[in-house]
Image 1 (cartoon, rainbow, N blue to C red):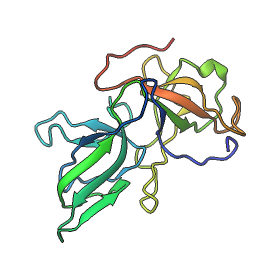
Image 2: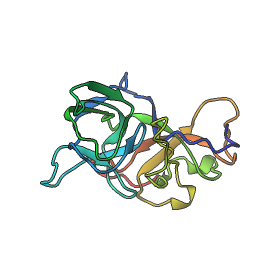
Image 3: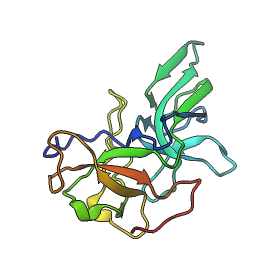
Length: 188
């Protein structure tokens, strides 16, 4: 798989504290952007939608990844989905988001990485990447974006067959290094 580009977003792998438990938030009815499963999201701090979640952009501090949503549509039917479709009008919106800053995620890189990448920090690729058919994000770790402080910190190679340092599209384990609830820590 490391020789083929098959991105899946920022997928939660495990939590050192035990179990990955998504936290319930909400999305503003009519929110105008798609949010796909495994896509980084942030808590909106402004007065418009304060406390709701929104898609995070490259360089934004973010809270975790979007894991799904349930809501009541305009026909009064309860819907459950792994994606939020842009401009959906709904009530009783419950969005599930990973929150624990210690969660370890897996993400595929868009270029080769080697073992010296451990401890390095990188941003993710364009946030709009993904499929509204499957509802899955297709963001990748941007190997060219290495910086002292960036969105994600590489902590190890993801275990699995056909995944090795130096491959074209390495799958790595990362943690959020620019988490909204935690102070930044520079690369090591």
